[in-house]
Amino acid sequence: EESADEVQDMDLRKREERITKLRTEALSEILTERGVAGILEFAEMGETANIIGLLMTTILSTNDVAEFILTAMPPGMDSWTRKNLAHGALHGLRDDQIRSDVLHRVGKSLSQGHLVKILELAPFHSSTWTLVDELGVPAQQAYWAGVSPNWDHQSDEDLNRAVERLLIAKRPRATFSCVHFVLEKLRSALLFRLMTEIATGRDEPPGHYRLDSYYITEAFKLLDASGEFSAEQLAGLEFPYIDALSRQSGAREARGIPNLEFYLEGHPEFFVEAVAWVYKRSDGRADPQALRLDDPELIQNRAERGAALLESIERIPGRNKLGEIEADRLLAWVNTVRQSCAELGRQNTGDISLGKLLSHASEGEDGVWPCEAVRDVLEQVQSPDISRGITTGLYNARGVHWRGKGGDQERELAEKYRKWEVALEFSHSCVARTILKRMADTYDKEAKGH
Image 1 (cartoon, rainbow, N blue to C red):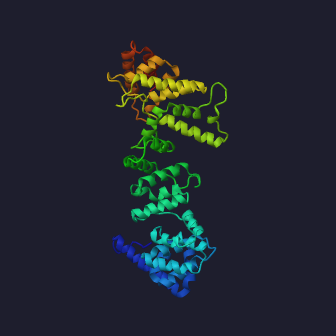
Image 2: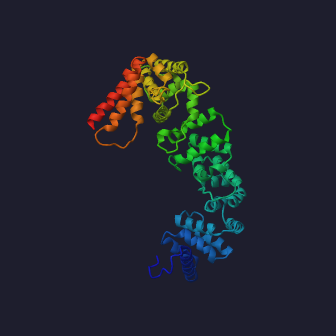
Image 3: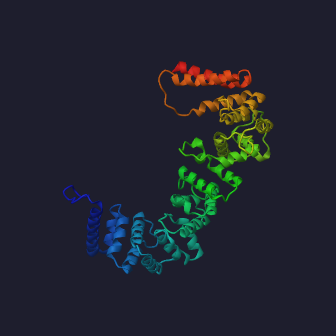
């Protein structure tokens, strides 16, 4: 660090140039007095090996850079300091042809297996891959399985080529980490394949290359815009990514799971399966073979996926081609789910799950909640557990909120539900009594507490 007296001006570029000059002079002095061995010893003394390697390319000739890399990385060497020296030197050679010449010189003295270790330290782009393609198949496979991919603004063609090779090496999470800033440059089919292999791949270590929900959402937006995939294909892909896509994730611009919700509308049995994954039977009987699993970890994972699905669905089924909810369509869907859940010994938990889904209903044209079709179905079904699921869903939908003093916020909510209760007390007495009155009473009680 320069002292305040040594800082000549505040131009950061000029300051960096001055420090680089001082560093280069220091390395030249060490090289003159102690040779490459002195450089290696010096690098081991600190944590700047990458910078040292980069600056050595400005001091040494092309032939000497090759010898420097060979000296720093002899066969069997696995030191991070030495790797950083070689990494800095290879990245300091800005010209692709010069770097290729250096690597060819290095390769003449090494086995392909060790040369791959050095190629993994070179810049991750096409000039390096050309050298990799000159090696045997085992060495090529070793490179793509071991390289740390890091994209640096190359052509779209090279980007897609790299993604294909990394996917062949079964490294989808590493691939996504490499290209998440430039997902729009991927071919749509390749992006779909990448997202599928991330969801299904099991070859990378758990937690390896963590995925950011923002970029997962961006990937799905690109797939939506491509128009190349059916709603059923996208629904199948949305399911593994529910935690990132769902509005329950808390993301400001959550995409949701529109295709999966649309699929559920036509396949109520999938909703029933999710209920069966999450909840145990209440009658003590055995599940059908198709629902049985022996591995506790798989059972746990399936239950978590099912719970995420049940919590994420917001679209009410039973819609016509105009997207309007029709009471008879919704009733048929609800009855199918209730009957199937009852056959699997899960009628109570199935009804509660249905209630949580129906809690997302909108207000009706008369300004009263729930909308006409949903209130008609609820009045006809009259299930206490569905009502309980609805009140739970409504209460939880409030989420995190700022609280004022005295309980006035809760009194406003109680008044809203009481108004709706009065509006429906004669036409839909069950809805008014078991849902709206219960919500009003709950908030009245909380208001007194606050």
